[in-house]
Image (spheres, rainbow, N blue to C red):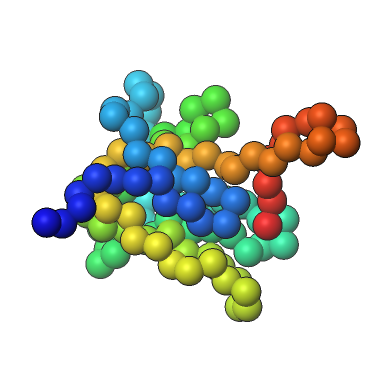
Length: 112
């Protein structure tokens, strides 16, 4: 039996988490979209396959997307890259992983 339960996809400091429904708001269509910016240009990019498009909604600093086909998330770096991951059709929220600094007692986003 094939496991068809969607699980979060971890890609570098990004977590692509399945959600039940897209928040209300105006979406835009893309074939490529940076879901994780890197200060050194080594972005994490959601890419459509075979020219398909997906819908992106950016709301309150959060990225949401829906795709009706398989897409992929890639790491635009020449070395030490994160493995390309397949994103099954569905609705997702992109979250940044957080880390806790026990010395400053601060939670902050993880950066590549």
